[in-house]
Each structure stands twice: as structure tokens, then as C-alpha cells.
Length: 310
Image 1 (tube, rainbow, N blue to C red):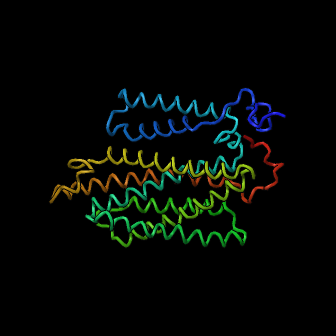
Image 2: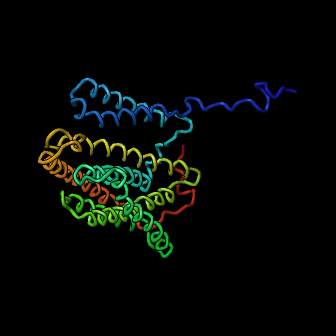
Image 3: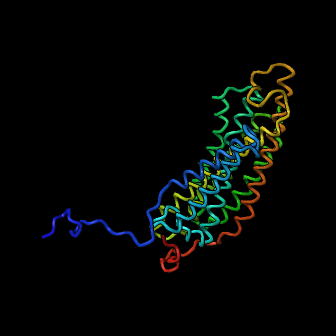
């Protein structure tokens, strides 16, 4: 009788398919890290043509190539390439990533504006994001009830993109003396838009994904949102630094006094308006992609989704 530890026993390890290797997170982590460093350092700490930025860009391209190669050779890939053949998943990932990039503009740079241009403390500036959080929470409750009455996720995604685009257009008109209650109202509108996008996009992805890959699809949509937020924050920060045309730099505005601070605050507000116009452009792309989603929920039968396999 063979021993349990024997290779021929019942506990011998399963053989991997020939030519297939287990998935690893190294290429994905390397790609994400180098991409963030390129967007963070480019034109901010180093010139775009500097050896460091160019080297990081080449490393990012190489890591992306390795990451894509692993998708096709891994026995159980973290992000199966066949998932992108399903239109609902492909569009859901793209819109979620763009939404994450736009969120960076609202979450990170409104508090900076309040501290730099309005002289509000960091703790008080953070409280201005409460209306946005309330909008997201309220829409989540209302949208769930409306979905039970027959409203489609596609309707919410289109509406959310349109509302968020409008909110960013309003934020782009912010001045140094804009009433604070109006700014809170704009952030509430941002929350109403994001609330329709974030929750409904996950539902779209989960409805379209095969049952055995629900976890993979949910993790993937969150990954694209996180990556979009990080890249958006870096790009918007670089844009803000490049467009700022005032005394010193943005980080030193809080130490300025008198006419220098007034001039710096005005230059900062002008640069912020351009950042929010870019955020408006991002949401315009979302608004163009949203109508491409199906009008009704896709059928769940596995026979219709057998093409999506690891």
C-alpha cells in the first residue's frame, strides 16, 4: 500500500497543464508602480526627456508586455483576457477606471483649494467632502429601490455620467470668493453622480460575468477604479503644477502673506479651473461610452458565457 507521502499516493500534487505557469502578481505590480512614477515625476521632478523618466517609461512598457503575456500563459490568470470579449465587462472596466480618475480631482484637490485659497484648516477642509459622501450613500439607497421597479443599470450609468459632468463644469467656475455653501452644493452633486456610477457599474459587471468568475470580475473592476484614481491624481497634480503661474509654488502658498498670497491664490484657482475642465473631459468620455451598455440585464445562463474561461 503506497504511503500518503509517496508521489504515487492519493495526496500527490496535481500536475500543471503543459506550457502553463501559475499566475504571479509581479508584472502587474511592476506595471502599476512604474506607471505611477512616470505620471508623478514627469515634468514635475524630472523632464519628460530625462533618462529617469524615459527609463521608467521603458520599464512600464516592458512590465505591461510581461503582464499581458502572463494573462495568456498562466494556468489561472488573475485577469483572464477572455473577459474583455464581453462588451459589458470591457465597457464596465473602462468607465470605472475613468470614474476613478475623475474622483481624484474632487477628493484631493477641493481640500487643497480650500486650504490654499480660502485659508481653511485641513481638518475643516476635509468636512467639505461630507456632502459628496452623503450624495453617494443616498443614491445607493434610491437606486436600489428604483432597480427593483425596473430601472436598468444603463440608465443610472448614463445619468450618473451626465450629472458628474455637470458638477465638474460648475467646479470649473470656482473663484477665490465663491460662496462655501455653493461649493458644498457642487460636491453634493458630484456625490449624486458618482453614487450612480460606482454601484451600478459593479452590478453591470457582476450581471455579465460568468458565475464562476464573479469574484475575479468584482476584483478587476475595483482594480481599474483604484488604478484610475492613482493615475488621475498624479496627472491632475502634474497639470496643476505646470499651469500654476504665481509666486513660488503651490506648496508654498500657505506661507505667503499680503499681495503675494492674493496673487498666488488667484493663480492657483485659475489652474484648478483647468484641472476641473480636464475632469469634465474625462466624464464626457464616460458619457459617450455609457449608451453602449445593454438596455437590459444580460442573461445569466452559463451556456451564453462559456467563452469567458480562464
